[in-house]
Length: 307
Ligand SMILES: Cc1cc2nc3c(=O)[nH]c(=O)nc-3n(C[C@H](O)[C@H](O)[C@H](O)COP(=O)(O)OP(=O)(O)OC[C@H]3O[C@@H](n4cnc5c(N)ncnc54)[C@H](O)[C@@H]3O)c2cc1C
Image 1 (cartoon, rainbow, N blue to C red):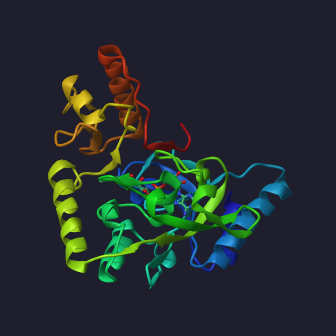
Image 2 (cartoon, rainbow, N blue to C red):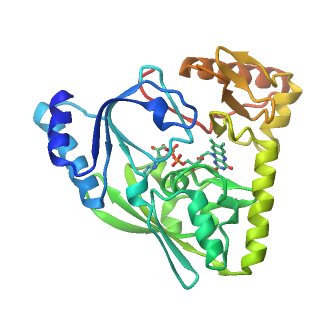
């Protein structure tokens, strides 16, 4: 790994970090070190970084795993950390442009930034995204949604890079969107850019809707606590929060991980929570809800790294 680190350090025009604590790159504030973290600063840099990792792996007849992250707001990283390379797509990929009713955003822009850019241009369709603390890339992967809105409803196309460095544009229907699902979960692709089709609207009304949604979010969700949003996907014909609350688990704690008192669908890190604390708490909630109500809960949070 050290050799790869040195080679990346010599080649990349971005940042290359050794043994970088993942707790500094996740909203849960949990996670051991990634062997190497690269924060590329251009598409060409990203392409070279992926090429170098693959060449190094081929030279040594080994697999060198790598994964892409955005804001780390849907990730639970293991206490041992991540073996291989983590590539973080953020500020260097945050350009947003508006042409007519089309908004084009690079993958590292935040959802709040695109929502505000749309509002500033009098475009409606992205109000739901305000306050979701992820990047556009992570949102395409997760098909993020809130308050009746979803990425798949407004995304026209996505620019992606495959692992050979080829760039292609995929249409909405190519992206296999479903509830918290997309093509990115089926194939190894890096999300580079999103093109959204929006509609002309009234700036004041859009702003009012956004502040109404922000108020709802602030009053109902523990947004000031380290967490990763809703822990579980919504089960058919049911809601996670009320089920967990009915089971008497609100405030239930394992180590530093607690079922949020504000919203029982969230787990918060009340201080020093480990990945194991959260994983154990997830298992406890799943077992209790299955036993009491016969409902299976599937995690929405993505657990990654060496377990
Ligand atoms: C307080 C709070 C509230 C939240 N509310 C909501 C909500 O209302 N609705 C909702 O849907 N989610 C919500 N979330 C979860 C989270 O913000 C979303 O899932 C978001 O879309 C994740 O984006 P990210 O950039 O943080 O992705 P990450 O967490 O960094 O990564 C998520 C997945 O996407 C992959 N990925 C990230 N970027 C790329 C890229 N450029 N190319 C390829 N793969 C990539 C990662 O490998 C990983 O599999 C909330 C989270 C928090 C902490």
